[in-house]
Length: 152
Image (cartoon, rainbow, N blue to C red; front, side, top):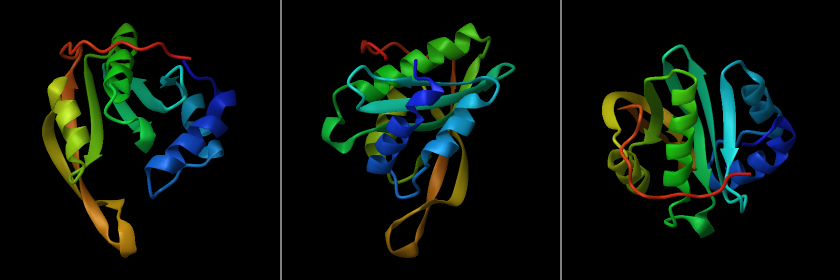
């Protein structure tokens, strides 16, 4: 589990992954909110930030550095976050994913997420353009896919 003191590390990771970068103060503020938690992998190559309220949880952000993608880090982070959300009595998990991010969409489908909505122009894209987000939902516990990592 990551603590608020690691917000600068999380912000640096976020900056490697997204055009709309969240700074350390933004991440620390989200982490401080009731029901929020962040998990970071032991190598500090990826993290997930989640908020759980009542029986619902929402992935606020998930990122894995480009150099370390496709090694199971994101799957392990999502699975561990869902387990922690379940411990807080969440029965479902929601998230938004860029409609053009096929590797992420495949990961989410693999662990049991399905599309329940669409947000037009949700994400910044190069050259001032905007891209749609798919709104996904999964029941907790997620489907098991066999990844396990240690979290700092």
